[in-house]
Length: 524
Image (cartoon, rainbow, N blue to C red; front, top):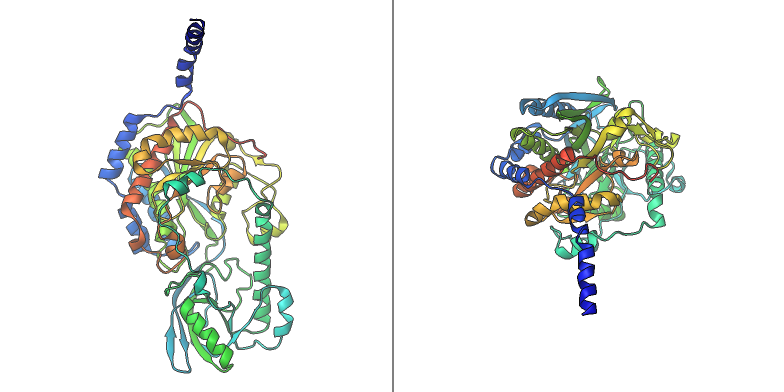
């Protein structure tokens, strides 16, 4: 009897806690979420948007006419959907670049055309040129001495042969097991802290090579695509900064054909190739622009929830998975809310960045102009005008106190499976509650891990809640990322619709909750 009484007493003592605990759980507006799902799944515009960005406008290298066309078209489209204050915010960039043709032909042992694409911002040839192939191993400045006086007029093979034994294919989608693993925090290693130093060292070595190859009068540089099956992956290779040394024309060759060139060059030093690279630089306007538009808030209109993606791309494909997909989803998310007549408490602001491919510099510029910045190392500034050190005091601007969160999408067209909380433990239960209604769509995981290399990073670096969604990879890294396969045909319609709905829900919930989202300590 005594044990029973004590058990009953324990239950009675716990009863007052139940209402308190329920009240503390993050509320979710399921009625509005149902409306969002209906609009996003039955009246979607996302594929129409991404078609125009890819098939009609095409690749959007920052500073190019196509990038400017995309910025203006998205501004007008958002305004036509009824968003307010749709405008372009310029920032200082550099010159634009396009290429209209590139060919590489092996002249002997028999004439053979090769698959090739120039690297971004590289120089052209001013007509067909030809010269002998020469394989070199130049990784650091210590390697220069052995090649002095031997490279003039040569076409250099800069990489070793592609190793097909190391080819791998990652799963297209996360499994329950891999999502559980992703949800487990991994303590950072000391090597993680050296990434910035290693990156800067690679940039310094590349600049030194360009200078050396220019002085040695190298005719052109050939590199192997890092992906097989005739896929060409190319990013930047020249420079968008006026006055900087562009260096010799730099091209990427299909891996299978590059290996053939290596074998031939090793046997015969007189193997010649002919190349013709047609490029154009644009120096008349050295600015680029971010596209900005809003759904005005009501009683908390001075507070802001942001959503975005980068609009620029490289030139190898049409920039579909990287990142017209993310841009179209961000646009679709705000279109859904506007179509439903949502009156958010906080202002919802969509941003489509340029300059991401050159180092997140469009989003860095925006964050620096509106929210805050950290000190900048002079060496870093020499390479990237708008990035700053990951440590040091944050200089904040008045708008810093008014941003609730920024949500980003930039990992292809795969469906959203969750979100990275960026080591912000306080948002984890909030995001878990927001994801719960989308478990039937595969979105379940909140990871406290940090993920980098896209446009939430400048926000996070100044202490603002900036987040990137977890997405199924599909063919992103293996096939489409920065390649000639990055086209509309590799987009997944259903996944993009799902991502639009989840994103619309997140920015709606963030805009409506009583408080702004919690932040990490500013010095973290």
